[in-house]
Length: 231
Image 1: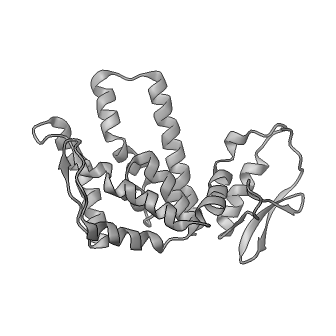
Image 2: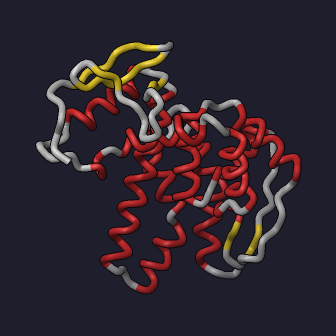
Image 3: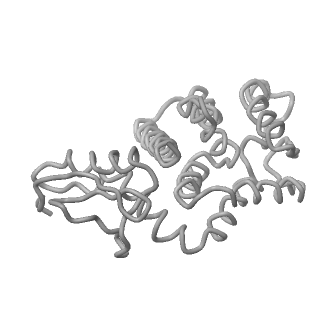
């Protein structure tokens, strides 16, 4: 598609902010006004439009796609988004460790245990740790508390959380990325610990490395989306 606009700016509307192309407000892919909660997020969305060339490249609309997802899919049914997120807590990657006599277990303890302990302390909950891959049910009180926690977030934050949790296979990692002073790049490295361990052990494949890099980029973009939506 050829670029069909000349100017890009942002304006306040309906207690939020909206990108405007040649003075006309943008809509989501499903036709709703694309109104976001902060000027900072609207400006990030505007940059995606402003940086397009003569031909529109849809792959460069990372923030726009997340905003559309939040408005079109999460906002009408936040309970469904929360249910999806809770499934990542039920099988959170931080809870599943190698056997204690394996070197990988030591590394998982070093990297994952402080992260899991931080979430437990902050939320007043307890996760079950598992050695091996056999699924173990997490405590009902833990899942109930996490549902309450998720219900306190708006649809933009829930959309970002769903992206981060699906990429990292961890609700804990996603929630930690929301904290003030969080280092999303370090959290992504923690989430990728097992993949990196196996790659170091058996060798690195170019295509697999590219996929990991793309997933990392998507995770970091979602963390930035959440930060801007809450600015």
